[in-house]
Image 1 (cartoon, rainbow, N blue to C red):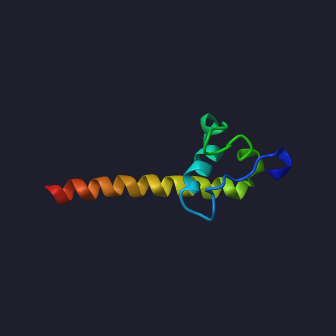
Image 2 (cartoon, rainbow, N blue to C red; image 1 turned 180 degrees about the vertical axis):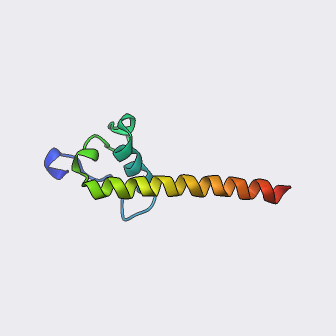
Length: 78
């Protein structure tokens, strides 16, 4: 990505909050834009096919965890 003059943001050190930005930039065209926090224009162009599989698995697991948490909290309150 450095060849395309796209560098990691200064706050992107290691894995953590930046994961969600990369997931959305890889999976959804809508988020492949340049904004103040993140330049997602080049992310999808520089991913390998396995990165897309890992990204999709991460997205599904996070959504599943959020739904499970909502269900557990609903039944715990009753």
